[in-house]
Image (cartoon, helix red, strand yellow):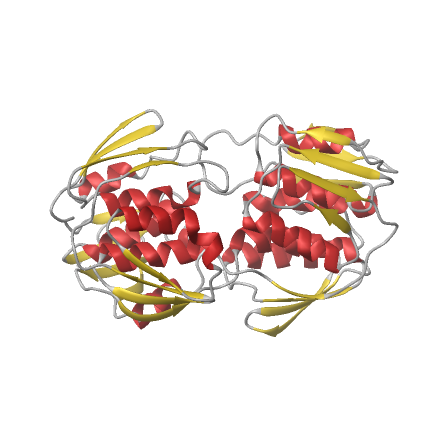
Length: 427
């Protein structure tokens, strides 16, 4: 077991470069199946969810070749299996995108019930609703979800609630279906647009991504292409918080400022200075942090993945902040860890009331999920003294080179091996 040891209380200074978007790449890698050809994917983040996705592609029969640390050639011409291995699919929630891609190309697919972060019930009923509308049946046996139907035919799908995963899976399954598919009440996040752009580069006809309605005209076949993943909006937001909470001054490079607008707006209200450039932003803070009211909502609202990070930022604001979680019901589990650091936070269901304290205190901390783990790292960076963050595998699912990037900004952070617990050795 590994952990982060962080000696905090130092303002972060310098430059950091943002990696490719986790939430885009976990759908784009399965989407290469639809090409039945070679694709070269650039700006791929070196994170564990990507490693699992590439393992799944290899297990299905794809040829995966690393061209450099962040570029892969994926040849899905001779994929021979439509069943994602159980042990791999359980390692990340996004394995369900293989269902849509396999169904779209082969008319069937099988994946284990998804794993990933435990943020409360995240049913895939809306995914199955889309598959069913296209003509596929589904069944669950021994914890495996199986979908099958051929030929798929275009259909009209109105989602009961806005779901990023269901929107993407519907797109993956519809691009090779006969006729036109209309998807309504869809998610509009930047990674939805990125997937649509990638599918179109492979020869699909997907229109309207980023709006409430996506229209897809089915094609008989698709082809390979070269594509670069967009920068990660949430990673960028995380470093914005790191700069702000430590009273630092950081230039964050390789970003799309437009994607960061919901985060930037709240940061500025909190008294943080944000300067936007073409593909970078500078974040600095010299004065006090001001309290905020935040409610997470689907894009273009404030992103749920930034909620733990902004909650950490507000722990030292001058006054009372209210954070309402509008997406997941189990997303405040990390608050107990912040209370160990001296934070004053009361949680009632989906609402956290935060009374700012002068500063956080160092403490031993445990990451309960990906974004909560990143938030605890930022909290530790602000606390004078030494903190430890354990269960860091959650964090490394979504952050490339976190330790190295923070060290480059002057942070005192290192990854160390955590000794196994057990009885003391006899002398």
